Amino acid sequence: MGNHLEVTPSRRPRRSFELWVLVCLLLASGLAGFLRLQAALYSWDVLIQIGLKPGPLYPTLSGAAWSLISFVAAVGLIFRQRWAPNFTRIGAAGMALAYWIDRLVLTRSSDAQINTPFAAGATALLVFFAFGVLALERQKQYFNR
Image 1: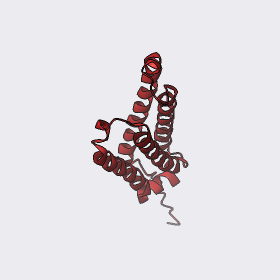
Image 2: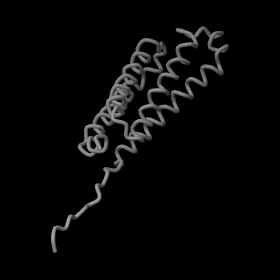
Image 3: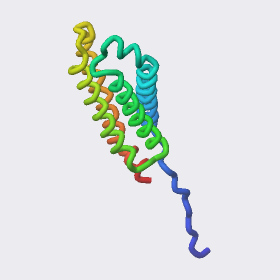
Image 4: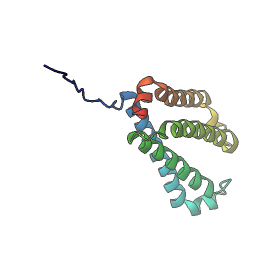
């Protein structure tokens, strides 16, 4: 009987398990940055008294930046913002670089360098995970709607 148009509902891609894991990692990273900021502010006078180099302003600002980058990336990924994958890639690479600059330039204790191979492996794994998850075809479809 005439033309029947079949209308299939367009199914929007859903967030994958891997994307949720990445979001959770970013939220944990943001919490760690916020706790660093909070600890630096709380212990400001003590950090000055013990002569922390480069001073208490550095952990305060770096904690704030770490927290802001992580939370913005997580929220962008949750709310399917088109800029979020690139922001997350740049943020993950930038935070890894900042971590290693901090570790290699500012850490003076030889005891703190004992776990360097583990830290290098964990950093590489986390950065590759972030890039890998965002490179999956289902993530590209999810963010391109």
